[in-house]
Image (cartoon, rainbow, N blue to C red; front, side):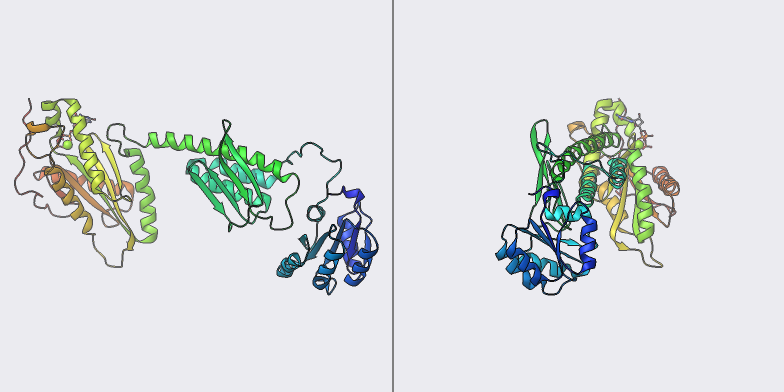
Length: 436
Ligand code: GH3
Ligand code: MG
């Protein structure tokens, strides 16, 4: 790997091309010839560290490459070409070229392709260069969006690294997470990710899109490995605290704050994609009497058991929350079936709600034991978007009104918003437990 001022360079191409190379490498006094055959002749008569030739500036370069390689196995052969001619440049690699550079050539690309050591020589280590403004802007974007979670953070870091290193692909693994951008090819550069002296993952770069990686790239990648570890750790911590802030301590369901946020998001999504969305509010009938008869702790356990049954009955995509006290809220939505013009209230949520009331009323509650005074029942109010409301407030109000109607008309039933009172889910009205 020669130092740049000592490099013996041969440039093959017409005068304008030779001038362009001389301008890109101002410290160099290359030998110039205008035809590949003249280049072969020169290489047979004197030693060159490297030769640069344009695929378009001189014909016959591809054919000449094999002879040059045989004649001077140690000489670094670099071809240049416009971006549109890149497939030919790849052929040149097969015929003996070491690298190619896209025209118009720059000093940085040429020096990298020629594998030259800049002066003064860094004998011990190559410090990473200062980040560019673009890198800083992209990194700020990563920091601003840490709340999207560790996986999204990792994906943003992979894109940032791909752009910075101009890599064909970047794969990052860290503990159980992994992210890949670009089509994975042969790994060219790899850097372990460490945390507290243990290796927890790696950053792997595919080939550099234009030319080869510079001598400082490895040092830069070490910095990025530290950054990835740091930002993923912070994103994980944030996700943990966020999860706690959105979880109800008693039932381990999502809490009201989370529910209302998701309701806003789903209203927007369902409006855009014309999807079904139904809000179900449920309230345990005569819950106070369980507290009074069995004590507050048993009341807590009853809430937990109802929450467990509710989660078990819902699909993964449904949003289930403890809305407060003995009240639960569920968002049922259909990710696939768009509403069609003139469609009516969906019937599935009503069937689901009634099925759930049946599950609870036939369940043997462990917390109540053999002294259970009778079936535990709930009442519910159902409101569907967009028929009963187009905003969070309107939908919650409609479902709440329906719940009130269900309570007033005998409990243990589901009431559809804006509909006449329906018959009870169970024919007989359950006897609430008598207060102690
Ligand atoms: P209704 O059929 O009309 O709903 O009657 P209810 O007795 O269930 O009355 P309501 O829903 O208005 O009362 C809920 C009660 O739940 C009031 C409160 O004392 C009790 N409660 C609220 N939060 C908790 C809790 O976290 N644990 C326990 N054990 N009780 C709670
Ligand atoms: Mg109640």
